[in-house]
Length: 288
Image (cartoon, rainbow, N blue to C red; front, side):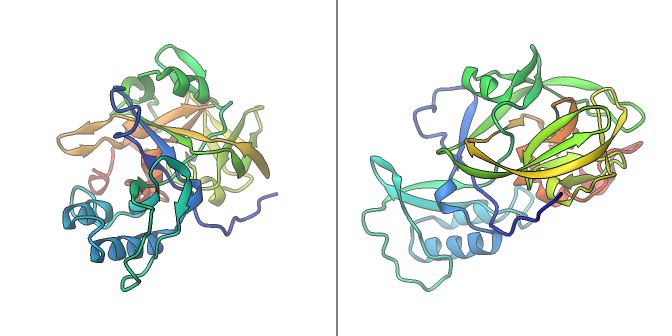
């Protein structure tokens, strides 16, 4: 049975300036305590700019992508007390609110996340639970090849650009998807998956009877979708598929539990590609 989640989607913390700054793989964490939707995120940026907590340049980056288009899911600032990462300020989400954040002067930037820690992804060295890969900072992951399509599922190895981890252990609503051939996958509701039609869909929009694409290119029909609660942290990964012409979309499709799955790129900057046809004979020009 599929139950629609009404709560706002969760968020990520960019921590490139934290303790992991020297790590070649940028670590991202998720801000569970300040999860707001896109409209509220725009309002938070409006407020922060008005109060001079962020610059006009940061505002533009948070709201717009590298090509000047409005992000489907915006970045937004979140505030906490220095030295106390558990003490958060519920900052305003509308322009014109009072510019008073008190002692909450430390700022991080938030986004979204994904797999339970036991879910296995395909890395260069083989299948690894995402928690193990995150813990070891595994730096090479298998993704679709640039020219892969429904008739030619082929792979390449890319560098890992970033991981994500929840800040703390909390209760997550997870969809447990099972397939006709015995496959199973546990993801958050907004996690993107590739269907046999070549379309990308968020897990919450997938139905029993739809088919996922297995690693070998075969279609595997979904037989059940059940929402379950999971207490703990969830994780995700983003490969590095940047090119001089923008992000290579195939490079953001990974193999999770034996199925083609979107990286966290498709939950954030690339969320506008969800519900669109990605895999066919050639990639549409408007997706490049």
